Length: 111
Length: 115
Image (cartoon, rainbow over all chains, first blue to last red):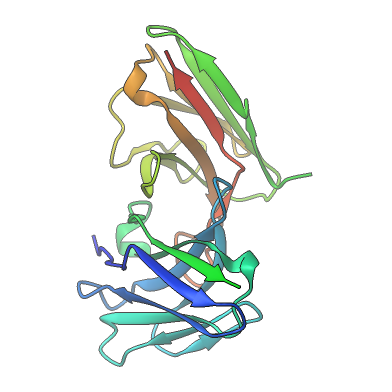
């Protein structure tokens, strides 16, 4: 099963872009990269996902390297409410149900 | 109302007691999951079910059992609770396992304390 590696913590100034990296060097060809965030101890919330191409939605952008071994989640204009733990996970039909949430990155947005 | 509802939200119990955590969903999803989260750590998969007749062990199934009573209901049981099972438990659903738009939808969590 593909595993991910994320830095344990990051800080970002309010209004600036937050760039959260994730390494997933063992990702297989049909596995997607998913990002979730967890605010305090609430249930994790889906942010975005991608397979090969870069993706953007109303919350964030996802940049996936050409070799797919790493990705970056971009919050373009971070606010204090974006302070949370961000999880990068990989998953696909070949390892259905076994995707692992690592310890994530705690992002602190500062005024 | 929440799409994925967990009950109870908080429970304090004693060592050796049997505990059941319940999860119900209104999303119509076939796939349901139970995760455990210890303080400061990520989520670990306990059990998952792809339909009513399907039950699969996850990463940390020892000491737990599950029941999929209906498409919408998935219960987690601790037959004899022990203190190191004190944790935050999450139920989740998905339409497809991480394929296409198969994102996970989480409940708000059940905090269990075993004394």
